[in-house]
Image 1 (cartoon, helix red, strand yellow):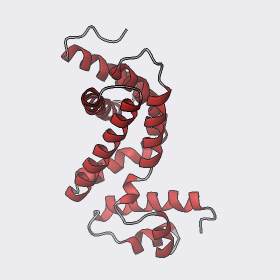
Image 2 (cartoon, one colour):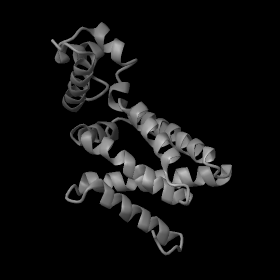
Image 3 (cartoon, rainbow, N blue to C red):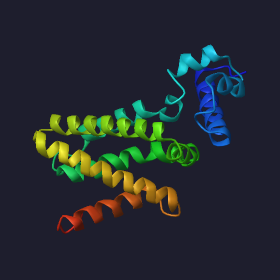
Image 4 (tube, rainbow, N blue to C red):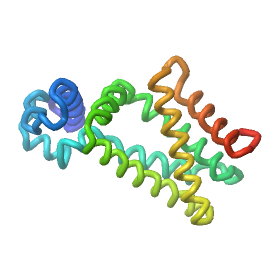
Length: 190
């Protein structure tokens, strides 16, 4: 039986992921997840509002890291340079959760309802990044475009890193942003 809330949460995440991979998301219940984790179903609902959210645990930490990093970025950076700097600051969060992230993506890819949920979560994160850019004085239109474009580069880098872990996530981020600058006709990072 897990003694701490953090340990119970970790075990619930792991149990859910195992069951989703074994049985599929739709055929797994919260009671089964709780039983596998060695807790009761009430404990499950103390940590997660529904069985989808187990796969999106950590979103609040990522949002906080991204918005804080945008605010803390050096003032002389362009919006896209700010985002590269920001995503580099968020990379350790993803790297620490790699063993969960890879199978998590497979479960999401196999479940349309989870794909929809992931898109909604991404849209919310993009809006938070755009708002953080606006607070830095970036005009609305540019902040939204930069956040959407930067998120696409971040997503591309993350997928490349999961496929090719030989290079760290930071190397993939630099490559994605270099590709983005090349697409826009820019000379690349300074």
